[in-house]
Length: 285
Image (cartoon, rainbow, N blue to C red; front, top):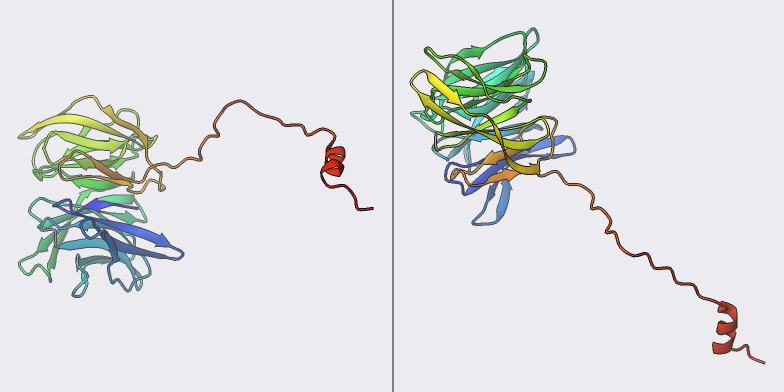
């Protein structure tokens, strides 16, 4: 689950579940090799790349709860804890400058809330976490905060209407929040060209919305179906990612059992079997 392209598009980070373990792997296309990152935790997930393409942040289980960990993408060095919590905290995207991380965290009283975390990355292998800032806390569930390419907007999903829909809200300053999906939506992903916002409908098919963003104004178009390919539902977790060139997706497709081919039915009757058997193999006298 949770495939994520590196900034140059040459590697893919993902989570793999095997029995009771859930680990982070990095697949290298040029070497055709998938290698696990050396996490001692039994469970880890939702890897995201830092803008420099050299580091990965993911959640992992820790004593007493969960942590957000910063690690080198080549597996070298030690994991740096950015945030510890008794509740599940899941990273989703970086701001373009790499100095702030957007994530969602469970609150026993309000459900999933959206947060950002400031980072000092002057020493890239040993970043220092700064102040946490709540972005959206309501009685409803808000998850999957995707930061726009210019850092001015955050797309997210919320069940405020009774089902999940994708909305866009300015990170700071003036500007109204805008509903993007119109028949259910989840898992927003921005294109790097600054003109398209992708998400999945509730049937797990990719849709896209064109938009224009100028100053404090965000104007989305009517969503349209980008592909009829149905993606595998991993209980609402991330199951796709857009390549940096914006031309293709890495997906986990829905795999269905093949339908048997229809055609003529042939039935063969073998008559007088025992007579024919005796003629071919007569009994010895």
